[in-house]
Length: 166
Image 1 (spheres, helix red, strand yellow):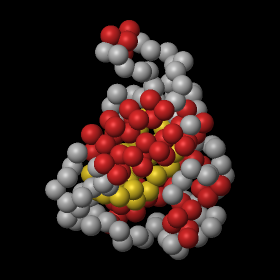
Image 2 (tube, helix red, strand yellow):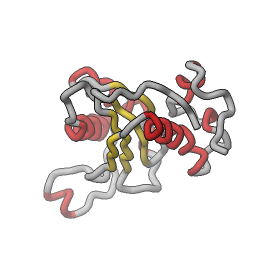
Image 3 (spheres, one colour):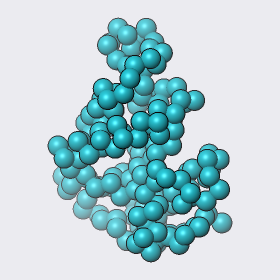
């Protein structure tokens, strides 16, 4: 298990899973610059600290720490999804209900969030994020996946190169 003491009680830290509607599409990795641009724009307007992230072709996992007294992660995700959707081409299937609401058919409407409740919880989710590309069969070692914060954590000495869950 990874020990990383970045978790702070007074600042809320959350784990997220965000999915595409069409899970077989590769929109996130095929449009990585648009996604990273959306993250940057929203972080400037509504600050948060990206503790960890892994971006897979059809979903992503992230750990965010929000400023003290600010728990509006829904606004941030809504704006990230919107900015990404505007930045990429059209062509996805759009359901009747989404058409009526003038929505694109890229993202699942909801996302999964979990409030991190201590060091062990933070560490477990950090490991989960970084191991996810291996779990889904994209690579054999977490640090072989380009779209992951594991590279920063290896640089910081939190993980060793070639780290894996045993």
